[in-house]
Length: 426
Image 1 (tube, rainbow, N blue to C red):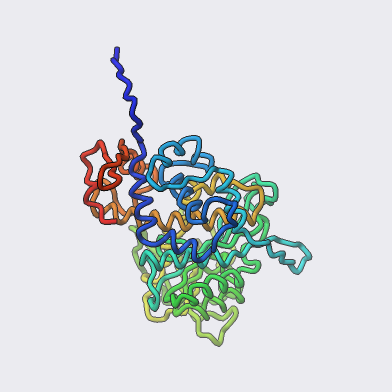
Image 2: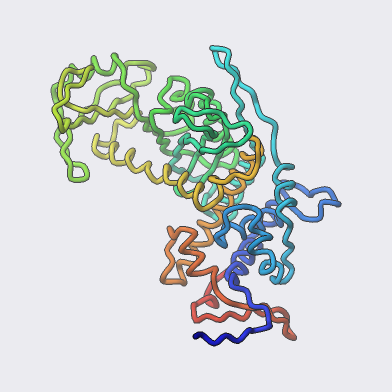
């Protein structure tokens, strides 16, 4: 039988969060948030920076929902000197205050769709990335964009093409960082008003002197109006092309296929001048084909090959280089998995699309800050890497026993650990 001796003095099992808060404040993120979003009314009691910092504490301590700030973490967070911790209701009210009205777009068939554009919060997110030097002005970057279903049963969630209910947000990323989010009804066609969404994203980046070298998107962006916006705002672009009669007529004329090996598989590749639309732009269609395993005949070409193609304005790189670059966009698609499972998108707090868009943008900013912070920690902790996910980070950094003690020269954090917390440069 285990003998137990109770220790009456309070010891926090989440003492690593103190370093998170110190970094959040010392880099100027609290000041940036309050200067960009302004002051809340006096009776509100808590600033926007305190609300967002407390939400950061929730997710970086392994929490799943806003309510965790009181049900699991509140006592420990309040023991941190000068750390004001709002209630879950206060956090939700603060986020609602930052919400914008939906824009209703009507399709040619007469159907109406809600979109939510929150440029103020998206701009704050970009400025926070500049603050942490995850982005730099007057520098070129690669830009990825994707729409994916976020399944939920919220009051205004619509039935999606996957036959479930949810939203269909458009998310733009640069590397591992989210730079723009625009929420839309779950039943909206992926190409509907996407050109406007992309123009909004490019425009905000451009306003901060961030330019785009290469843009990369899947077939959901293969449309004349979308391609025109992408081409205008990027030096180079790479978009998965849809199948069409025009393209397959050109494919049948190809005689000089090149054999390549990609990820230990054999393919044939070729390039043709794109003629479906914007023929005057001299765009290139990179085509890749592979033998079908069951010798099934393609209905368009009449041969036993499976075809894929990429539309680009890049005539310099080889077909293999272009295909490899396009295939690496899987990193941007992983963002949705991270946001769903680590930052609350799977359990959004509000009933309405516009309020949940606010939540998504704020949690994207928290995720970007986490990427910055875990990068700092990885330089000191051997068992943490820049790509460590939240769960492992909590076990290896946040979950450390400690206690704040007031001494003659101020507050001191006593940790019950041999890990190198003292070496952190925050």
